[in-house]
Image 1 (spheres, rainbow, N blue to C red):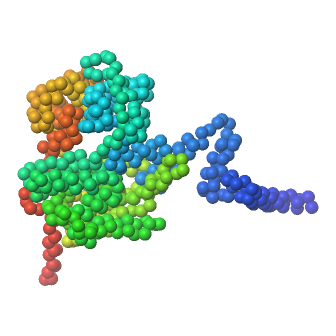
Image 2 (tube, helix red, strand yellow):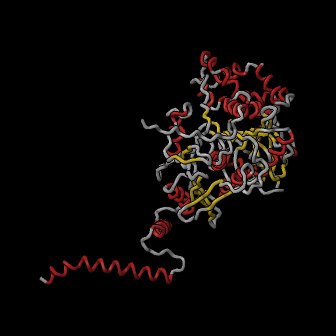
Image 3 (cartoon, rainbow, N blue to C red):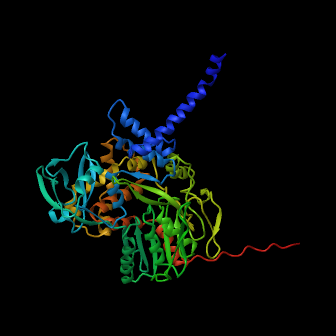
Length: 549
């Protein structure tokens, strides 16, 4: 009987011993082991303990730092699509896009057949001063061969970028020669401009294309506006298509330039971040100029902050297609090893109170990333009626209805032009064959093409060269079967794509934008708004009163 009773209490005694052991172990771990990990059953300590156990007991040697680099992104992915981890080796590259400059050699390059091809050389930059020219093929860096599978964009950046005033020896093979020529380049600060184009669309309309919001965007904007002022502009188009955003403060500064005093531009708020309002100070020099803002599905974040401020304050007419829908604010937090995270700490809201962050499911990044494809398949790029508003209705300063919950819907919708779109064109574009052909043609004809210094004269010359037929022959030899009927149907699209890339290769980004804008329906819609004196939105007519019989 006593034996059975002791058996009955044995599990309880064992459990008490285990608990007592854990308590004693935790006490000694906390008081006697310095930085050693305790065994408190919390999430963070379980992770620390797991790494400690793996490091201490796993069958093979394990690089714990590498394991952490892989684990942290998985943890952040369970939060939202924009909280991300950036390893120490990638931090500089991630931040360079937001800064006004970086230290390097001053070239634009493309990688073809495992070799770096210099696409453009920045004027007055280190590479140009050393003697490197567009078309050169880089085959060695610091006397070490740099060709083959090792050549990636990341590795090229790593080898060519470096601290200011340091030297790098670059070996190149020039067109028409097999001899390797060596150039010693002294790295310097390379301006990284966020404004891609500033020019007059017509006698009265200025155009500014902003491709990102960085530290120097506002200063660049003031220079661009001053340049247009000298040319007598009285209307302005700001093109934010495919601008994925950047620094919030730059968007606020830019909005301030166009708004009267004390207008709300944007506000941010989060669980641990009290509401913060950003308002205009009334010092902007262009508060009264007729303004049109262009957006599309690639316009995100800071682009949407600026666009939302203009729309909700009824300051501009918005033209294009619904924007991306990123309404989350990230803060950069650095770790001692040089890595960092960008953690979402708040949401931003447009002046009317709408958060334009599109819906997402925690941990389901794949569905989030497929959103634009889903919108395309649902016909949203081609019909305004296909836009699905998931958020409630809000009202602008004069009572116009706007919607939150998934990007900014433009005031004037312009469908994507699919005239001439064929399976042949899609394959030619997506395979990279058009880009390859444009570069090869540029490289083979640089001496002749160097004679053209203006976009229009180069465009006229290329139009006479039957570029589409040349491309079709080139592509056919590389696996894209020539299909004359489809080529004929897509002739205009093919010619525009090919010619635009050659113009970009030979001139610059502004010339490229000018060429593409010549026949752009969104640009035409903007010019019509100015002709109709309709840039400033009108107050909606009151709803008719119901009459009782």
